[in-house]
Image 1 (cartoon, one colour):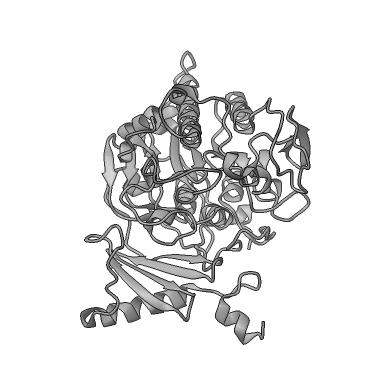
Image 2 (tube, helix red, strand yellow):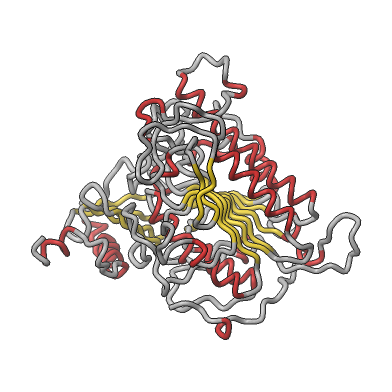
Length: 472
């Protein structure tokens, strides 16, 4: 059910130095509530950042963001593919509860409550620049019907494959780009033969323009959902679309790997420009910036994730529920509030954004969330309270996973498959299945029960057992 204004608490300024910042040259009396900037990368692996051990791809701005803030070693995406991960991020509900559990163009409904909606009703300016994936024009899930006052980019994830499309969307209206895409698909997908306007660059400029146009006292929620470094799946092995090879042009690497590296370094530079803009506007110390990725690295468009060790010490990539598919970069920066150089080992999850944003904006979160408030952790007050973390995946025969403390269990197919058990403290690469050991029998039963309890049936995303029970 949607949250009404009467269900919201009067937004309060947090008791931190962030509340007393002001623009250079402005009167010091300007007081703002804290703002929130969420940067979501697309298919960026845990190991793709220098601060997490990357040796080939240069990410100086993100490394600086980690050095000036907090790096979560066990930050988890909502899913191992795009749309459900974004649904978890926006609704604060894991994939056993959230509306969108797969990449099937199922839109959010009017009764689904998003973090953007709650913050907007609390008096925040809200905007989405980039990729949505939770409802196309005309649907109930379109971002302008889900709490965002401004939207510019892609609503459809297949359209978003194409970094040189013929159009982007401003709200529900098409904005033409000077590219040529022969045999363009229904959703705007395809491979451009004339590449003049790189969509992620255009989206970036629009986001900066919106940020700079805000009023001096406006608290804001900016959701910057880039499509980098996702591949153009319709371009086959020529799908790493980037306008320049940057410093990698002369590297003795395969072309696709130079393109992949250039995409990530371009994203890094864009994040650097966002942070610099906050500084320029005098908003850095009252803005919590989160940097995340929607799932693990991909093997698409000609990219080889093993070349640059994109998943680091983790096993698996996108579309796997092993750590490499769901453990992602998870950085937080808030000068004066988040301690510089902090590293948090406790697991955190996309679903935690919702309660955190509500605490930030002084809003009462809706009932029934799977979300935890991470603000105390971000202030350096210790790890969040432990709770089971849950994932479902409705492709490739289905799979589900749960993490509780050091223990991780995976079951495929959902509900009826055999369960695999891993000790992540001793076996981060998930190489040794401990489920068959007698001393873990009680633990295996408990984790299986947690999986069963976490799943609420969905008419749009049925498990194999549910489909069999219905005779199809």
